[in-house]
Amino acid sequence: MLGKTLSALIAAATFAGTAQAATEIQWWHAMGGGTTGELVETFAKRFNASQDDYVINPVYKGTYTETMTGAIAAYRSGEQPAIVQVFEVGTATMMGAREAIYPVHELVADTGVEWHPDDYLDAVKSYYTTPDGKLLSLPFNSSTPVLFYNKDAFEKAGLDPNNPPSTWAALADASRKLIDTGAAECGFTTGWQSWVQLENLGAWHGEAIATRANGFEGLDTELRLDNGLFVDHIAQLAAWQKEDIFRYGGRRGDANPLFYTGKCAMLMNSSAYYGSVTKETDFEFGITFLPYRGEVAAAPQNSIIGGATLWVLRGHDEATYEGVAEFFRYLSSPEVQAEWHQKTGYVPITYSAYERSREQGFYRENPGTDIAIKQLTFNKPVPASKGLRLGNFVQVREVLNNALEAVWSGDKNAERALADAVAEGNALLRRFEKTHQ
Image (cartoon, rainbow, N blue to C red):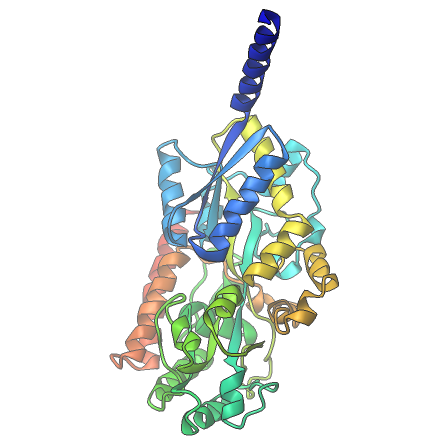
């Protein structure tokens, strides 16, 4: 009996030692409640259960801005996580912090983990690579803005619910008919206004918002948002406000309820809101491409991504980085990425995940869920449509949002607001250039 008890104690001690030996890896993220936050927790739990060497600990740190700035502050105090989720506009800032980041291509090479970089979608991968194509951070949640529309409202207004407007002129005409027939109070609203109505407007029409290929070719770049395309577009939106063709509902996803409740018949926002649109609406909806201006010869070109990637921070031991590499391999698997894509509306970051979703019949059973991928790959990206890599762009986007809201409130016209934003934004770019030479 004593022998059995002693054996049991030894076994228990051995098990405890093994459990304690597991390397804990902190992952700071900005995925709050709802589907995305739940999936982040699910993926971490599944990975943890799949092996005994590492424990991924996901920690929600607030908004994208709060998460990034929190991680930077933590690095300075030596308390940084191994993994931090950073939104796309923080890319240049992270690249500038060379001593703090551990590029993914180096991580993979150092740990020897099996990797297939060619499997990543070109439109996603190109945003986060060095000039010679080496991956800096792991694409995770990538999206692009699309047009959600209320099919029931279209039908009530006598519009073809299977033939949504493709140009801005057609969208305005449809909006008037929707309002005149009482099918909706307003035509459309938009979320993430700088990203959708300026940054993606430029890419979709082959027009850069800044010099030096939107910052991909160097730090000495300047904003170009005070030209005809952007000024004309924002002035048009301001005029449409007076007819309720356009109604502003706030930044990020604040405008979404205008669509969920049927007040506005159309919503331009991230494809990643697909899950929320599905849950929050009680009408049939469709998804289609962003509208384009028919008079612009280069349109439509391709849209650009939003969302975020996972950056690795230095200052941890070898075991931690081996665990990070294994976790990244897991997150990039076709099974995980297909599930993430199908449940959230984010695009699959790999061709294999896209193919898996297609073979599973997801696009056939959920029409429109492949629009984001088709729009991103509509044409081969040109320098004006590869994305944005501007220093201090978190602050620059705040400047642009303030400028747009000054237009919507009537405090400034489009020309003055964008000219002021360009001047203020360029000062921020010069400040970043000075400190990152």
